[in-house]
Image 1 (cartoon, rainbow, N blue to C red):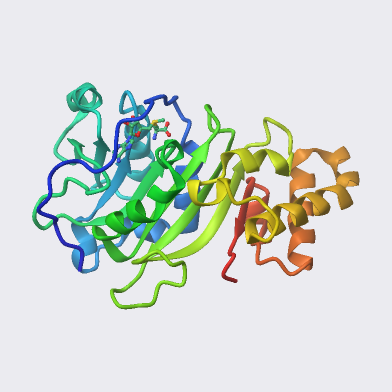
Image 2: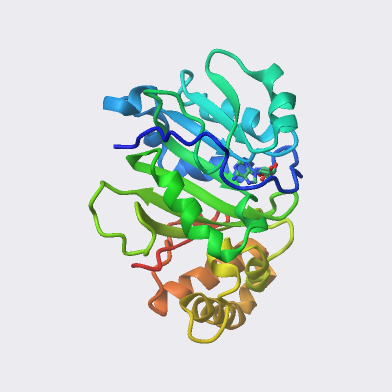
Length: 280
Ligand SMILES: C[S@@+](CC[C@H](N)C(=O)[O-])C[C@H]1O[C@@H](n2cnc3c(N)ncnc32)[C@H](O)[C@@H]1O
């Protein structure tokens, strides 16, 4: 069971607070499509559990946008925005209400007794840390998430046209962590594009999550994946005459033919989401 830690000093450090309206719209839309039941489930401790937006930035706009998106499916959803920078918490507090909270905190989430977490979104937060900070941050966050809950953690371009993210599932205590990160199963790596920048697989390399961005080197699975994805885009380049979306779809289908565990359902590909499950 997640527990509330005694330590109150926020873990982590303040980083640049840049954000933008609707930057994370496609992240929320992804969750709404991937697992809407996570937002609505009311069994046991999930009933009152929260969505946590970790590191929302210089103001709370993306948290408030998510609140309105997610509350279309669950009007009672509790939402907690967490910032390690006090001024940013103060800037958000005027927008707090009986189910929307803003608190000072870090990777050791500032939860109260009996509060639980169903979903964490941490976007453009770990990017500014070192790779060695990645696993400890995930392991600390795992302490607060209900088994079966999710974390989506990633990096986007400044206006959210492109992003990539780890989708991590909180496991039951005691289940061996294949990912090497205690508490989590790395369920998928997601690549997202709204096609406004066309399609170039290589561009996703620059916005990989922190655990992968320095690993695009021979011998690493993420390197092989990008090599294969680029080969598949080259082989399917005739489809670009029909637009970036068709090209993206054709390249993903080719990747699947080559044995990569990518989701080829149209509901993902036509919307610009490539879901890869490195663990198959
Ligand atoms: C670039 S902003 C991202 C804002 C928003 N999530 C977005 O993607 O547009 C990163 C924010 O994360 C905050 N931050 C960094 N480390 C943190 C931590 N350990 N706990 C809470 N917030 C943190 C920083 O203070 C900063 O405001």
